[in-house]
Image 1 (cartoon, rainbow, N blue to C red):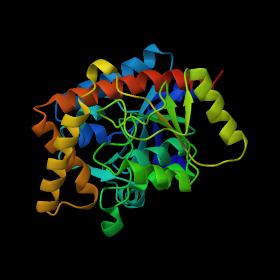
Image 2: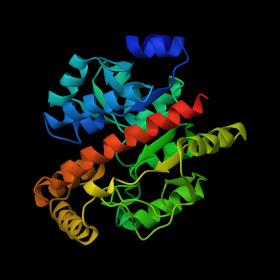
Image 3: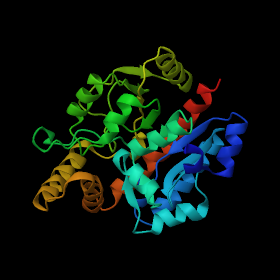
Image 4: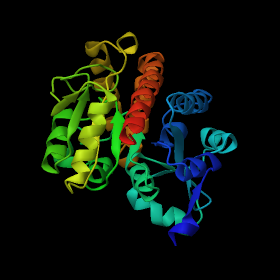
Length: 303
């Protein structure tokens, strides 16, 4: 069954044969996270950064019911322009595959597909988490449960600042997911380099990160690892400013009864509007930075 569903891009297939480091990339950031043409331009630039560091990029998506591990330029363009691509998390994968539909993979779905393909490192923007007021809405991202059980390292700029970061960390602690700061003792909050919260551990170079990752899995401790890599200082937004913007966006989401998987795209779009586009520039910068560090860690893991 798996052989019939998984489809590898030629570049990824060659990397598997030669035992080269491979880095997984999600596709929701292309279809739902950024406008055209910045989405496809960023996707290509991120892949280029990974190649320059000696690894092979594998952007993941569901196309015509196939789990694609690595996409062609035409497929990236299709995802960037199409209005009829589902936002695919764990629960959606069986339906999309069995009905030969198209889906862009979230953090959770990308982790699953990367694990099926034997890929250990995945680069994204920020993880999902516990949403604000989750004590009444029960709105908790499936990303967290995937981190609890799937052996993939997620390199990100921390949790999205639209979330309840404190509760997100509590959830990850309950399920034994290490949150590791890359050259930082504070958890980055996506658009900003710091938050009021500390990371569990700190690493200062790719080799240290790789050693920690390898040791966790060799001890038989299943589940992912969060490598929290702060946005570069020159691209970070002012903490007070972005928090005010997020509060305004959250209020508007509540007024419009936005719920479930529609919340994050709505909030990111509203934040982009309220920051006059500076949040999009920051988003692009942090994804590229994560690709740089993530690919270096993937290379170290194969040493």
